[in-house]
Length: 203
Image: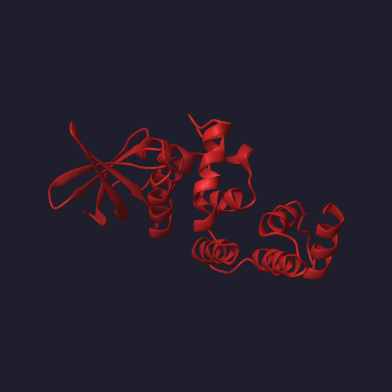
């Protein structure tokens, strides 16, 4: 198993990167988000977390910029009927963070935007992965990524989480709570109480 590859980015193709590691060039299939991240970084040293897919006629490497994205990719592979290319397509169409929220809120439409994923497959994906995601974990991951890429945490993420937890405490299901708070537009100076009130109106 190749956990990650760190080396010089020598080429960026359509859906692929080539990384030179000690004189050996590794071709790695990546989501579109990674292509965008490394655009203009030819010659720089980068680190990509990888998954090695072995089949009878060859081996393929799939890569991601974070361990979290890789773990979600592996979860997608547990869904019957979704292979590495399909899972990569899903994570190109929707981020790992948004996929968690889509699964938890039964958002078939968001998932079926991925190439080759129809409503039936999206519904099956939600059914099979729903018990593997938790609302608090989804918010924590989102908050963590905001800190990583923006330098500071997102207050909006915390507000949504508190409002969703309050709705769950009031007896609403996790799916209902998450769907309701996601529909609320977070304006400047909005409070948890404001989000809760607007969410309750929708419920």
